[in-house]
Image (cartoon, rainbow, N blue to C red; front, side):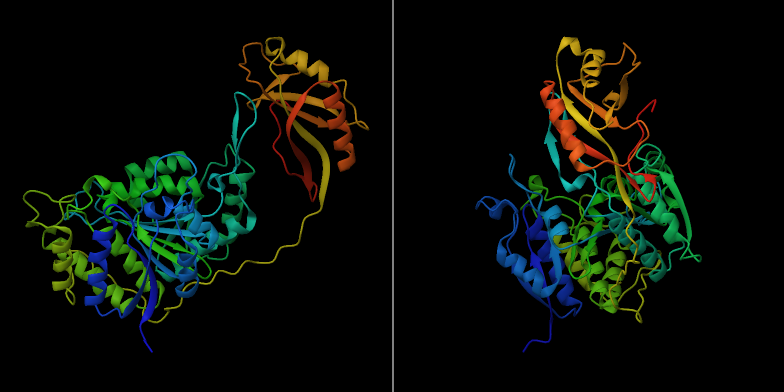
Length: 484
């Protein structure tokens, strides 16, 4: 019976097979002692009619090995094809996306030679939930979902990662000056959890200025934790300012399964030419070795890779006249790394991994009592495109509805108050949010809401969506509209 550690491997599409071949050769030469369960994913699977891009036997493999080393894939053009990465992350609960972004100057050209940050991105929630609707002729909706346990998991992971890896500071990035509830929850949980790690510095930045600072002064950051969409954007910005997106590896970590990959795409324009840089996937594989408790092998490969860069053996994407000594093909670059196994870089700081604590991090959520939830009103969304879209017409019409004191308070259009006392200059679409509450904000029942909707229908209005207005332990669970 084999004593080798079994992992799931996918060669992917485009340049994927070339860089995977190079990466596995290096792993084998380093004596990693891995057994590969090769699965097929990506374009060929999509074209078989499997919309997820992954066959059931591939899922079975991941359930068995719990470790996935994956090359980039190509998603066919046209609708109906799901993102395999998003599907894998969400189906297997891979809540943490970890992307180290480090400069290797002067061997890889960068304007920011001191950059050494890690971006930790929430992987399952936010706008990537993919819940979208067309609600009217003119208006489309995407739901941004942020949960308290989801926020707590990723923030705890960021602090535990910093603690385990000797990092000094964790920075949270949100847009809670605008999204005070959703992003506000993330910021609030960050502040709460940061108190449990007094030895680690912490701060918060609004995502727009945070992104600008990553582009201008990336060396000021250490560990950054953020929401899904923001993390997707800033991790590419950070990778690019260090010199090349092509060098970046990525880990997607869950409670049981973890996936490791390069952050770049399948680059079909250069596929089959033997010129692709395998470094991104190799760095993902190094993260995988640390995850499965092989820090010595990870260290061996990482240092040989940096020594290869120091010696000027570069693929074409990072080749520099006057600095590089050889423009290497994909497999020649792998050969160079293999030749340097056991060597360390002389000018760059060698990699050192913790040899004592080799277990994957386990994140435990703190129990929290459920809040008292009280229904005090409802936002009713209306599709209305009549009378030149005069807000006063729809407003006076809806004021006729009264369900046990539940009456119209105001109307907004794209978040701007238009009734009562709206501004005539405000541009309105055919999508109207109509807020109904009682005068004293008393607690109401679902039957009251149903009665209200029946009245709205009888008044001739097309309601397309409702959002209940709740108090949680007496605190508002909804944002106030302008002028409310």
